[in-house]
Image 1 (cartoon, rainbow, N blue to C red):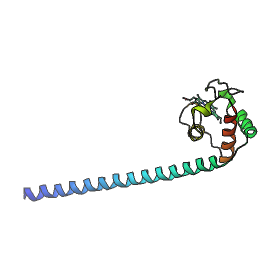
Image 2 (tube, protein in one colour; image 1 turned 90 degrees about the vertical axis):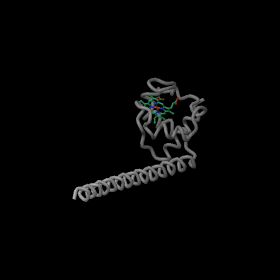
Image 3 (cartoon, rainbow, N blue to C red; image 1 turned 45 degrees about the vertical axis):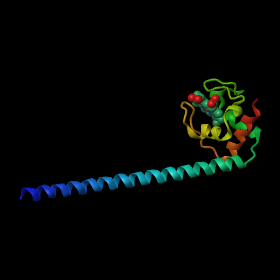
Length: 128
Ligand code: HEC
């Protein structure tokens, strides 16, 4: 009697254990697929931006609206660093990530379409 009740408890335990494993497995699967979808969208954005040939003047205007508060009117730096010769230190992909990623507070992330991002890149390349 006592042995059969303990094996029933064991079975319950195993069932609960399996259920938890399944839940963890599906949670991981969902996280992974979200990660891959995001990753592909980011890559698509970067590829699209890099295929464009932006305008430095348009980028200058964008910079004056969005960036001068922190990087200074001539991009010589204020709260944020001097951006002259930034294109020598960071490649275009890294700059795109810097502007759209919001990974280094207090610099915010900017939602900017590929055309304008390409303009900004062209402007940053024009700073020596
Ligand atoms: C609220 C202030 C703020 C605004 C607005 C801002 N930035 Fe920044 N930015 C920073 C700060 C602070 C850093 C330094 C972050 C760090 O490295 O920790 C930075 C870093 C950078 C860097 C990397 C510099 C390096 O030396 O690695 C680039 C490129 C950049 N910003 C471009 C831009 C552009 C382009 C805009 C406008 C679209 C912009 N930032 C708007 C504050 C700002």
